[in-house]
Image (cartoon, rainbow, N blue to C red; front, top):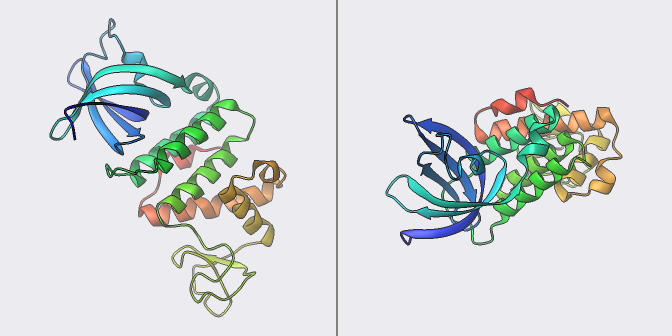
Length: 243
């Protein structure tokens, strides 16, 4: 990697370093996940401290280092923080999205930038407020799992491949399972919830929003279980999401 480079990125999280610096974790378009030091940003007169907060889409210039890079310039492209932090359901859902991305993503370069573009689109939808936050979150989580190679089987049996419809979801098997493959731990799922999951995975907002509350909640539980299983640990922010 060249010593000095520019990229677009979304700030996933920050934490203090020393008295005035901060470590910024970004998901970038062309360089994967990047951790960089922003020097002096905690001082009152910092040139770009406010631009490096979670939920922000920025054009950032970085100097590469062995373990941590260094932020040298940053320009705000789009700020989602104001709209997101002003509403608790949006804030908790968006926080769960950032935490999931941080745990799912490594520093491997994604030439297609699909993960970055998916996050930008989800942040834009969350800040826009026209779609309920929980639906944006569930759709994002499902699509993120799919990009990571963990898309749940929502038609054929995940164990034997038998044609559906099936009425049980086994997170350890990777999706719906037929009655012959159903094991202890698989949960019964209504057909309406399966159809809702399919719509979420496709990002079909026009039809997703028509689902009733009970169906959306049933699907949300399945999504949360799938994320927890594949990450092998819980996403703390999901516990605060209002569904």
